[in-house]
Length: 321
Image (cartoon, rainbow, N blue to C red; front, top):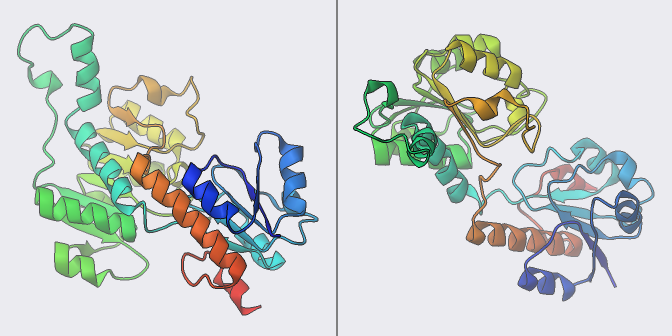
């Protein structure tokens, strides 16, 4: 019977589904040696949020497929998996809308200073009507610049254009004609986007090309009134440069769901900045979406082991072998 290693807790019905198709061994990834040993005689694996290194796969000669319960796959060495003939699947579709909701909540919370003022009220500081020192900025009618107009970026653009009458600028490897026609999105080069946008939103995967895509020079080129939104991957932004920009008033604020180091270290200056909304990487963290992601990842894995998976494949080159 086929063997699957699960290094993430799965909903009962998803676990039962996998058990219909294979023996499932649940492991704690913190027990590194046990985890690696389990992979050595497994046919497939499912999980998330754990870095899978080439060294961990040495001797795992039966392993044919891995399925991550996420859209991002930077925890894997994709080139190494491809070399070994191991298919990697991910879940890019089911989390689009909930993640776009999170992105837009960061836009609204940052613009209207929601977290800062909620804490101010709870501290007992609301004694009279607030004055200009505590005012926020409008979202309605402003310009949103989206770096990466894929599934999630397009869903954010829809909310912005149709819900808040925002002008949408975007950069992307290819033109997104559907977003241009439906939401009036305009494709521009990155310098124009940074100089023009009131809100700059990152929606790109983490690759060597996107690491520190936004650094000191890019932040300096943004409006002083601009707000940076990042719910993609923390390392797409040079966090040290961002901290300096926020401290120096180079930009107005930031809404962040991701960071270079997660969890965010207790001594991070970001934690003490009133102009920063910091969330614990909750992009897709709703009951409904996380369940759908787990189910999708499980179905991807079973189909991959059956040789029938046609979508959600990261390294399609494996199929040609």
